[in-house]
Image (cartoon, rainbow, N blue to C red):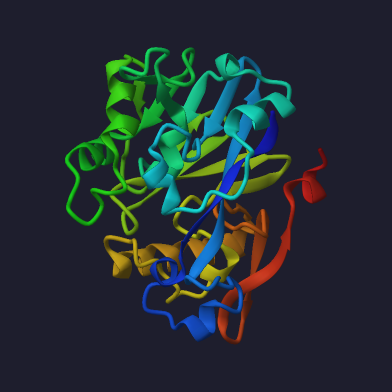
Length: 286
């Protein structure tokens, strides 16, 4: 097995929305905002090369939305998923599995594109199975008013229409061996049945954090996004995870932290806090 971090570009989101009730005087220490109160965020994905399987976790925002849509998010990087794949020696058609932690537009938009005639949409990865879970799929295709702007039908429905959709079975909060050396922790605070992959790699456990922990600035327990549908549940799930991450020395792979790619945690007198941050290659090599 070999793991490759992939950059799909950066964007901006409102700092207040990203930190909920936490005052700006606190969160801006780790995530400084611009004059419009917007902070920089990455859309970092992970590619797992394992025998005949080439598995992509999340797919970024893509490029098919309108100019008006993108103007809200201040895209600041010309890097794309296709470019990042090519830099690792792969083509879009090589991907066998696309694992979508959840179906918010910044996690799945890059998995669907316009067709050649621009009359409809089709999968970017024509040879891949697309993995979601039934609970979340129903939640996303029948969206509540709070999340409706994040669940875009053009990102979601073409997956099912293509016949490439597969579901991960959810039994409780943890499903083992979804793929070899690949387990899934389910959480419901951010959105229904978000999947947090745990990958066993070189005697370590690497956890793809998705939106359970967007950045190192979100490590303190009360630092919960305003986007979360059930923030108190997020805090419970986060506390459970942070303690386990400390006990088992997990490597946290941060999807949205524009500065810190990976991190480890430690217990302090103030609670669980950052121990170290580093790039993936610093720990595992290129």
